[in-house]
Image (cartoon, rainbow, N blue to C red; front, side):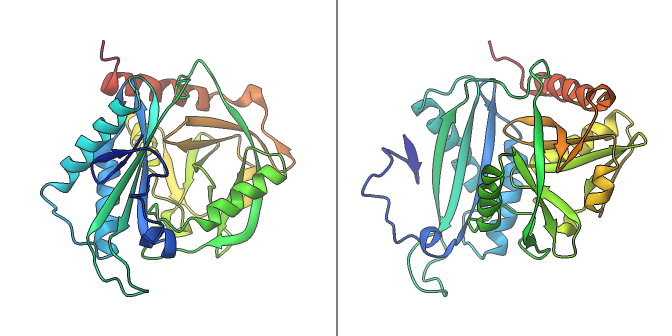
Length: 288
């Protein structure tokens, strides 16, 4: 079941007009929220990013109540789809009404999709390793909307298709200046000489929710971390590389293009996966 403005509907219901502005112009935003032990991870952080985007796009919405409206409907969607353990809820926000490039109505409509997950990908006892390849055909640009999850996701769609065609798990996207930015699904972290690095937001990468949690986690663990611009050459010279996203948590990179990162040197990534999982259990432990 999907949730359109508080009404539960079957996918493809006639109430969902194909003439909405998200479909016609990509005029909208979205957030993908991980459900962990039956609870939405970092809902307030997701909402702050969504609220920032709605302000930038000029939406008119009840700022005092809209957050709770989304929170209540998220719980409603979880219940309707039987999600009581692990899952994902996507919140789509799009501008109401019609019009051409100039909108006739700035009110936000919301659509929620909820899915169960069979496994808990965050569990550090189930390590995940991925293979990466460069994707330079569509560079990312830093600007007013970079860092947000907008409905216009063509660079990531094209990158995901490229990854599938080249039989790798994901691909590295670059800034317009040629710096490593992110992958089609995750933020990138690299470890060199016990120093942790992650691409600056000025590369045009998404300001990831779990990216920020990992940065805070490293600070609590007294692990030195720097946000900076760096090249693909630098990435190959690192001892360990890992990806961070809200669906799967932390994933170790074992191969980048033709370069392989030795498994025996991967010591900090497993440690961070364990620390992140324990931190989530502390915040969002089993409800039972």
